Length: 290
Image (cartoon, rainbow, N blue to C red; front, side, top):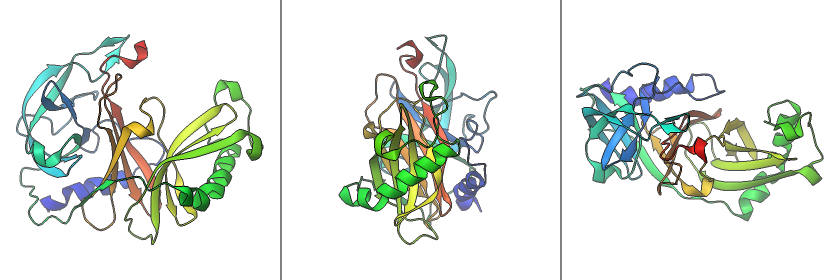
């Protein structure tokens, strides 16, 4: 039973409403950062999250693979958040485990002490972008039509400068680009392709993670808001499928720390479309002060 806990956590995420990310740590899944030579999880929740006490075990997914880690002590640390343009001192759980096998840390999933990776069927993949002219030819018209329909339905986030804008002339005011895209095994789909696109209508723009099956979009836009600052080109992408059956996490992270702090993104991808469950960053220099 313990071996399938990450799968159960994933299914719980998939069953949640699609509109926004989960509350911080609510499903026992946390962003992991490196600071001062330590790997740590900041306690950003309104109360002490379960699973961050000394001796707690976590399955950590990183840039190279996954491994079991444990909380070996807690400490006060800066860099996790800011208030009034000043860094906050937060309690952080410091982690110990096989760093070399994992690479750069991305997320940790709380697991019981009985959990083992022995016999695991999990599939881990580094994703490289496969975007080229073919992707634009296959998805261009579909994306254009979907974005216009979403704008007319009020689902596109127009800024104050475009207040009242609906259904503009696509030939003049709609532009889009695909910044990243990769094939990804998804149960129930024959030709799945996950990608990040950014669309501008008039003076407003939106960035989305989307899923396509051939020329058809599957589900809606899993928005990647600009409240985090890294351009897509600064992000690297990996997929981790705990069951090995086509029910993956799609994870994005900054390998080189930007001035405004590392970022962590997490999505669940299903045959019904993608859903954001994690959007987080370190505020190394308090971004609101820029």
